[in-house]
Image (cartoon, rainbow, N blue to C red):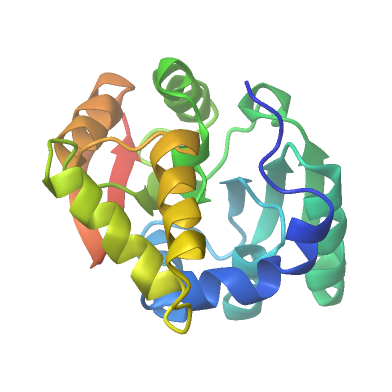
Length: 225
């Protein structure tokens, strides 16, 4: 897998980025928490893949004081930020540096991966989902949300432009906007919604359903078989 996407100066700006770039960011956390709680016990254990920064960990922990969490992220800098973000809940949060292979075996009562999978190369996506599935109890909910939109042209370029425009509404410099568009086009792995749902099914998840759509982002709820 490639090097972690967040390090150094990018970490310092992370806390401001998602709320600005992701439509309904706080509500995405609220919806995720609600969907997990439908099947989670009051003392449930949650696996959070891509936990660096700690924003979702903190939101989940504040909403459910009985839940405990294992957060996994490849970036040591981002995990340091997560540790600071969740310090009020430190007794219920364990952080692990690495990828899904470095996550505890579980079994977990639920799992989430928010704003992470578009950083995972296509040829590693299915294996990552299978490894995640293997760590869940039967029937455990899994919530995943990230960038996903049609990949045919001209739709792909249009969606990239929309994504950049929403995330940087006050940027008017054409060169900066073009650099952002090129970064999205070349550095992320973006699949169509249909491919996302097919891959979740192939990895062993059932009842895959779309619960969130915000411009260039999509979110799905599914359950481990």
